[in-house]
Image (tube, rainbow, N blue to C red; front, top):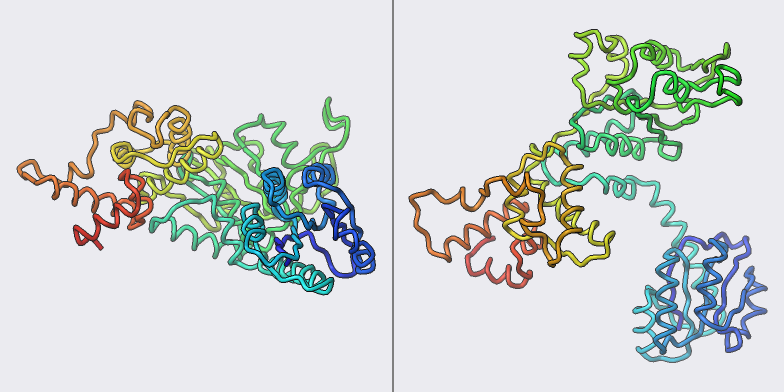
Length: 463
């Protein structure tokens, strides 16, 4: 049979493929002539360890891996697992004449995916053809909104406000007008700008970010508009500005509220005429880039105080998108925290699986003035400090630990006297509500496995 993983390196039938054949002294050596006659250049090695080394050196020059090894030994399994981990897009085909489940199980353990019976070279050719067709289908799907939607994965949130924001991003992306993204520091304004670019017809062109507050006026002017050779002392060569460099793409002018006053009329001229004049040059250069601006300032107030040009404000603010602060997204705090725990644990190589109920209560009641960025930093710190499978209150920063715990205790009036069963029932309902019905997340926060949670839900008739 053939066990194979479908990857995207298989080219068209007319292009010669480079296939790495492992165990060439065995039965696969007889396929040498057939492979070459069918547009394939085989490279023979004896062991999977050699194959792993060659794949690393080839840097993407191998189109598929073909082997008849049984994967019975621990070393073979380990080498194959290493290969499929380091090269997830590489098609791997395992040939065997045995009709036994053991090779199949071993192959699946090594990371392979699909199975196909082998009756001769023709079956191998059909398998290779099939992988090519599946690759073409995958590439076609990649251009659809269904796959593009996964590019919003960096923007996490299930609250009503975030769902509305996602829908607005998709609508705005289809136009080519200027967009002003407003919101507090740490809310993810740059992620919104990038999502607009990814959903737009310009998605295959550059996405360039310029921080208008990070550079002095002269340097920012040179970076944006470019300069000619000899324009100033250090201008030994001509420099193409980022507005021109982003040809066909999108430019994010981050912190535009801090743009120096002297540059504001020059930017306005670029937006009006779609042309830029590099510093020290008399030549106009066409600009074809969508402009998105972002700020944490109240630009209307800046205009009233004569700190920002009114005409530039109206030019960049054709559509305004406000990114809500985290304190208005209560439903998202624990959802974001759990995802950040997963990422931080993987990055730090620790097995932290969740957050204790008391720590979750503290986090849910905290105001998060630094928004999502502060929450992410908090989780990164907590994962680094904890020595337990779950983040506890003691792992949280002091300003969060000081916050008075509410939630369950707030739901119980001072004069109420409840049994432990009633307290537990209310606590489970409260956690489920905070998790928006996500039972897996609720189980993590409650510190129980899902079977235990389902048993309690049935016991308390909680739907």
